[in-house]
Length: 144
View (cartoon, rainbow, N blue to C red):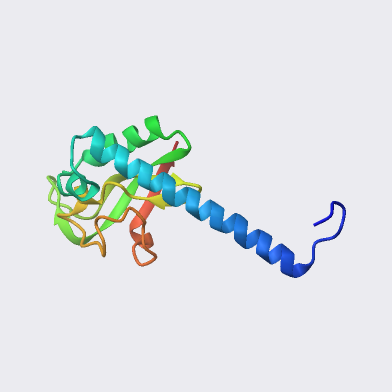
């Protein structure tokens, strides 16, 4: 294409699609790098094993580790709605627990779903993507 020649609508769509595909590929690659970092830094064989060994409260250190090693992410602290309410130490019924997750390119991802397995039945505990039917659960309070 010659310089200074206007781009037609068809060429513009191809250009936008190409840029979008590259961005998607970059995000997928970054997610895979994060997953690999998490399980190798904890001496696990794979990401699923890493998730299976998460406990309640691990989300904060997981998100801190991601933020430290992947500075292009944002650390999010908030509350997450659980499946079944529990009674806290004061005798009050609770529908939320505090939780940490990240944002990458403005999209939330949860690499510590395993820490919530006692409270939430996720569609896929091993996929850090927050599915559309799970988004309502995540209520951010603070981002850094």
